[in-house]
Structures are given as structure tokens and as C-alpha cells.
Length: 398
Ligand code: PMP
Image 1 (cartoon, protein in one colour):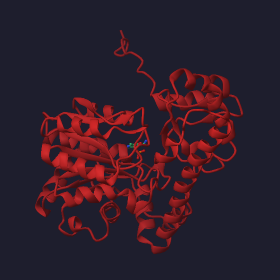
Image 2 (cartoon, rainbow, N blue to C red):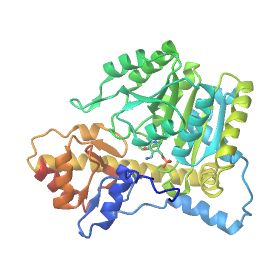
Image 3 (cartoon, rainbow, N blue to C red):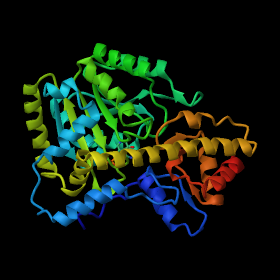
Image 4 (cartoon, helix red, strand yellow):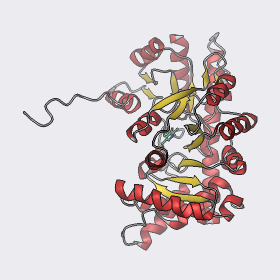
């Protein structure tokens, strides 16, 4: 028999599988609210002008394509650190942060998970309930047992903070806690600054290890504002990990540009930790690709391109917020009795709408509008031309 004769078909990825069904749908009015990608008002993934300018310069220079260092481009790593922790960060000054260029936020989480598995072989990992569905898979594939802590409150459509805090308080010391820095995926419900302070106190008191996932810096309130939780962790004196990504903020999804940063207690620890993380990278993919990191580094190092990027990022952020406001108004205008005002309080690309599976199915079957079966929709896929149609469909299935 074939070596593979007994191999079972793996289940389709719930979100990428949705895109396959969407692509196969022949209706011209179809809308994909499933995937977490920012589309502009024309329904296109933007190529940012700042990126285009940096790419033009890079192509003209025709750089050779040698291997990168295992940890990636040094200029990129330094500039990422400043974006995360601030240009005047005391942690950076003291050499307490080890950063490597990673293959997107996913790659950063995976390298971090592999490293933590060696550092803390008996620890358990806790993710928010619910969380980005890949969190569980990444940590399980690294060998961890994964469980969840309470997070979302379906009644208030916000965070059940009391439950979250008592959940964290009950975790065994040394547990790894995955936190979303901003724009929580899938719920859009974020913690307030006061709540972050309490979370940090709990993590310190319980001896937990925070792994912060920041995939959407700049999509909630601004580049600096969205790094507030990180700054608070930085000020706490704790050691923690950060997975960050430029997939969304630079609209560079397919280039796989991200970073893993580890905050240590000293410059000496940083050197030792970095040496171990480089071993993980070496044994996985040896070194990261050149293009995406070079582009991001070039944009952020140039005052002019950086300013361009900030403006373009603000446009993306504000367009999503406008779609949030507009969707709520349009639902009200259609006489929908459910109060959807929570959509304007949520942040980032997503909203947990409260739509049930049967309603999501009807939206797909009758209207060709694709949402995740949990009721998660991507607001960044709405535009001035499809929003009325989507509001009609939601009103019809409610
Ligand atoms: N974390 C979260 C919470 C995400 O939503 C995503 C992207 N969907 C990622 C990490 C991974 O991002 P990347 O595409 O950069 O791997």
C-alpha cells in the first residue's frame, strides 16, 4: 500500500476555506466579509505609496540576493524596536530587548512558541476565549497544551473583565498568557488602559509569562496609542515576548514581514536569549527573506516616506471607523431593533456581530455575503458601494 494510503483529509481552514467558496461564487453582488484583509473603497488591497516609492528605489539599486543574517536585517530590527517601545525607550537604551525579523506575525509567534517550549517545557499556554483561531494551532504544534481564559462577553459585546481577571488569577505560576495588544481578533473588543494595568499587576503577582500579539498596530487609535499596552508592560519590569506584524499596517500581507521581540532583565540576558532564538530560526528556515523587511526599514528610516506611511495608515484606520459608523446608521435606518452601536465601540478590522450560524448561512445562500460562522465580519471589506447591500442582508436575516 502507499505510504499515504491511510492519510485523512484535514478539515479546511475555516477562514481561508470561506475565501475558496467565495471565489467559486458567480454572483456579481457577492461580498467577502470573512478574511482579515484591508480593502480600500474600491474593494482592492492597497499598495501604499510609501511602499511603492521604497520599492522603486530598491529595484533601481538592484541589490544582490545573498543570505540575510539569521536574525534578519539589523536596521529593520532596530527600527521595529523603536516603533514598539518608543524611540526614547529606557529598555532599548539598557539593551533589554532582543528582536529578530520574522515571517509575519505568524512566524514570530511560531519562533517564540518554539523557544518558550525549550525554556518552559512543562508550562501550559492560555489564549483568550475566543481568539484568533491560529493561536491554538501554533502553540499546539510547538508541543504545548493550550487552554483559554475568559475574555468576551456576548451580552455587553465587550470584555468580561471580572471573569478575565479571575481566570488569570487562577492560572498556575509560569503559565504562558497570549494577549492581543489592540484590535482583538475576532471580537474587536479591547482592554482599557486601566484594565491593562490590572492585567499587568495580575501577571506580575501570579508569575505568568505574557506573550503579546500585536498584528494591527495603527488600526485602532494610532501608531503610538496602539502600543500603549506594550509601553505599560515595558514600564512594569516584567520579562515578556511580543510578536508584531506589518502585514496590515503596511499592506504587505504576502511579503511576510514581522518581528519577534523578547524583553529581558539585562543586556547580558538579551545576548544569551538572542543566541538561543537564532538556533530556533536556523533549524526552521535558516534566515528570513530580504525584500519585505528592507522595504519597511527604508520607509521607516526616511522622514518623508515615514510621514507618507503615517498618513496612509491613518486613512485606512479612518475608513474602517467610517464604515463602522455607517453600518450602524444604515441598520438603524432599516428599522432593525437590535442595538448595533457596539460596532462603533469595537476596534480594528473585526466585529463579533452576534449573528448566529443560521443567519450567517442565509446571508451566504441568499445574498452571496460571506461571514465567519461565529458571526465575525471584517469591516475593512465594506465600502461605499457594498454597504447598503450588506445592511439590507443583515436586516433581512435578523
Ligand atoms: N495575530 C493575529 C491576532 C492576527 O489576526 C493575525 C493575522 N490574521 C496574525 C497574528 C498573523 O499575521 P501575519 O499575517 O503577519 O502572519
